[in-house]
Length: 250
Image (cartoon, rainbow, N blue to C red):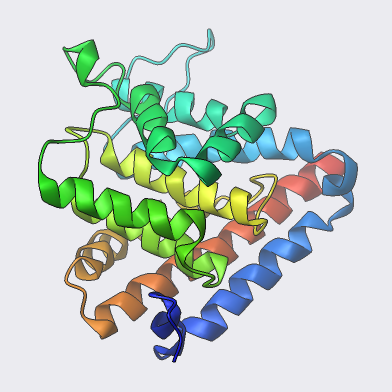
C-alpha cells in the first residue's frame, strides 16, 4: 500500500489522463523553436498576461498605464507577483519554494497585498489559528517531498488548498495562483513559466469559483472535478504559450 497521501487522487476518474495531457502540452511548448533560446522573452510576455488575468479573477483592473504604474491595487499586486515569477527573480524564489514553502507564500503575499493593507506588519503573516497553521504545514510537507504525485495534480492541490484555507487577510487568490505556478517551475513541469493557465481560469470564472469551493469539501468527485479543471487550464495555458512563441518567431 502506498504511503503517499496524494496517490489516491490519480485513481479518481479522469484525473490521470488530464494530468498527462497537461504535462505533454507544456513539454511540447518548451520545444518550440522560439522557446529553445528565446524563452526569456516569451516567459516575460506570459508573466504579464498571467498577472493581468490573475488580477481580473479577483475583480481587479486589466488596464496598464503607459508609465508602467497601476492605479488599481489588485492589479499592482498581481503584476508585482508576475515580475517575481519572471526572469532573474524566478530562480531564487523557486529555490525558496522548494525548501521553505511558507517563506515563499509570505513573500508572495507581501508583493500581492502591499497596496491592500493599512498595516505593513500584516504583510506576509498568515491569519492566527491552529487550523490555518496546520494546513499550511501540511502543504509545506507535500511541496518538500511528502508526495511524488504528478506535478499537475500537486499544482491543483496547492492552488485549491490555498484558496480554501484563506491563509492571509487579503490577496489569497493571487497568492494561490502564483503558488500553483511555483509548483510547475520547481517540479520541472513548466520550468520557464511559459504557460498561462490564468487566462482560462478567468474565461471560465464561474467554474473556477464553484469548483475551487467544491475542492474545499474534500468529496472525491469534487476533488476530481477541480483537479481536472486545473489540468485543462494548464493545457490551454500551453496553447496560449504557443501563440506567444509563434508571434515571437514571426
